[in-house]
Length: 334
Ligand code: KG4
Ligand code: ZN
Image 1 (cartoon, helix red, strand yellow):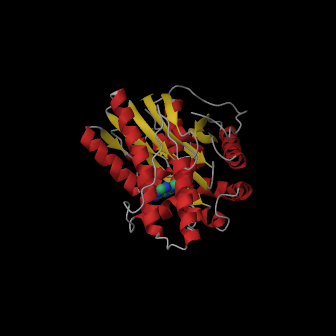
Image 2 (cartoon, rainbow, N blue to C red; image 1 turned 45 degrees about the horizontal axis):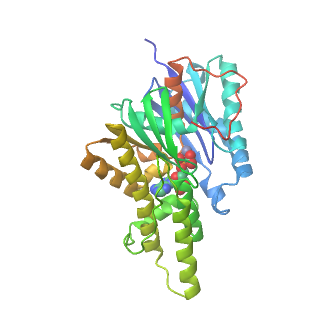
Image 3 (cartoon, rainbow, N blue to C red; image 1 turned 90 degrees about the vertical axis):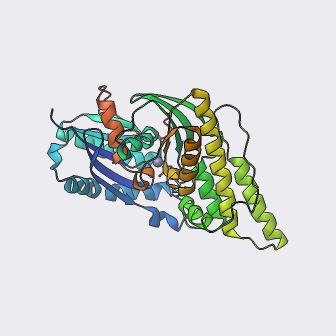
């Protein structure tokens, strides 16, 4: 059978990305142009600046993905693009580029949900991974537990009722004057801090949901009251103690849900999966409880187009193609 080459395109937030995938799981190229330095001076992503930068970047990034895959553009068999959730202006750049190319090349277009893409990053890192499994997605915008029954059959069991875990990392980092994005900075600082120094609360939420706003307020209160009393703040201890509370909340809930569902495999996904302490804690808990543990390589944890191409490939297997009227859906759910 002839190889299927999927071009993936991702522009949902602050990375302009394109990738070429051979069949379901072989990455031929994975190009990511990050806008992080551009947004850093504002302390977060500025949507209008992100859209403008995507417009400038999109064609050079696609050209680079085609070139480094060692193929010609007209060899692409199908195009998979993120159409939500994300920033509307940013998404529209990728969707418009994908629609235009699909029309010009006369190839099918596939509309990919960004969150599903994050889960599928795991299929690229581990060729032996097969559904069913329980997935914990932790990104800047989402924190959710999802049952993946098959390649095209998912169920969202629960999600955060307020802040996403990544959002909490970014907000706390901002208050501590650390650069954007805060997650990697807190991760770095936590390595030299004492995680037992401050006891921050973990929200007790029923069912399958999470909550991080109480923890965020507790950290902010701690920092404000120390400042007011003139008490010296040890940023590394705050980072380590906060990170421990987030990780405990994520790991305890995931393990208890996995036991309830009698799951065999647990799969970590999303930008916060790049956090080494989260990965290590969930891995250890999985080992103790007898679950197989999967998580993507660092470059596939945060936003990329290889994961979008992978999700798109499996959609194409069930003829789940989009029309040329595809639009961006910023608030798309799973
Ligand atoms: O999945 P992602 O790249 O974008 C979204 O879809 O949201 O996730 C970005 C989030 C940001 O909140 C960032 O601070 C967080 O992932 N992040 C981390 C780490 N690396 C990225 N959080 C904690 N530790 C890290 N090492
Ligand atoms: Zn993402």
